[in-house]
Image (tube, rainbow, N blue to C red; front, side):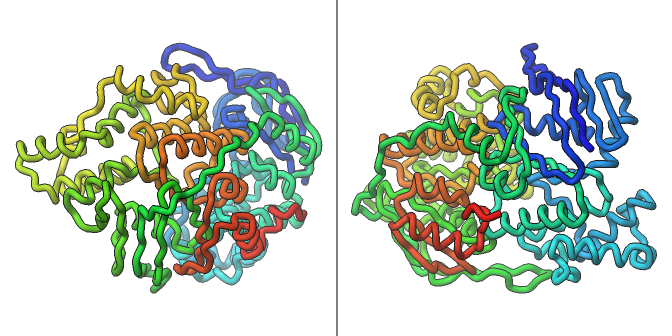
Length: 568
């Protein structure tokens, strides 16, 4: 069904250095088989999947899917043929029409014949493809959501709708790139079950890239292992997963124990959310808890439970409708929702790493670290006050600008442009650090994160996925924050790299006395790093415990996550 013969692919960096992404890769996939591909970040997994899809031209070898083939000399016409016979599901893709679930599928079915998805004649689409649309929705278990608008679906339902739209193309092969890696166990189980059902009932050949052993063991019939662009082993999911984990660091012998000193207090927080197309969808209420100094607290729960909203309120990025979020800064309790110098003092000691973090695409790593230190160095508040006075900014307005430094870069720039301001105003108020001082400040952080100092001079697009995550973490940690908020930023990491990051966080938090509040769906990561967890569902706290094994196991049972129990 799929035949890959001696495929190689190189990339050239800006400095002329060549990186070999794939080197003489060969394998076959039988019709109806589920083949797993494993490997660490930067091993060539995504490049291989893109080549199978026909969007990445290969430098040597050949690829055959069904009766369509390409090689290094093939024109774009033949690569386009690969696109027609394959369908791909990307982890972070949510490209859906603002229509109902059924209409989203009808659009794709209509486009299969009439080549225009944007101008769909729904009367024609219904008469010709209505039955097929219903059958596809049944396959992905979305029949009960057929008349719901895509915008009000949960994350897992959106992912299954994307899969349904791909099936409408009648592909010969379904390519999955880290399916549901970022999702909660409940959502992930739904997506994995949909893949199995598609494979069993339609006999569609599936190639699944995933660095998660639990996913490969649940889905794959056979797994190949990539290292540095080469296949180094092939076998059963159990065999290859065990080999993949051989190089994992042991858990560092550090026990992060919180003190008895309260440093964060959340009091009677209430917030209500509405969707115009769906009415009230989430109400966060009766949220009360304290966080002790050097706590490593995980917030767990299914998708839509309110975890990210709560963390954004902890970070002062969203305001509660009622209640307070207080921080102990230099012996004085300050409210992060009240504009002014008190909130700036909190922010100067606060690091926030978002799930959808993004590095500056073209800037070097060193330049981005220098900018970050400009935002968060110890003297920044006093210096920024002086600059603000010179240009006539009030302390409240200066604080509003400082809030933007904790937002993802794109969101911060959009907010400034919405009020007619040049985003460069942040650099004027908080100028970047000298490069030599920045390099000195980051050396120990890079060593703890197992990052080579040579990458300081690389640009973001020259980094592997694992390097990007660790560089972003270095950006947050370089200012030695007292408080660190993490919104599921490590979901894309393979378990070997994640163990390195976990060990690094344990060392760094212990060394610098950092209090961490984090969201994660990775149950092993939660157990290894946290000393306490809060379990949320439907906007409420339903459990708060320091017994990490018990609360995580309860979470797995709550999500009916069979793939985490070894069930297949």
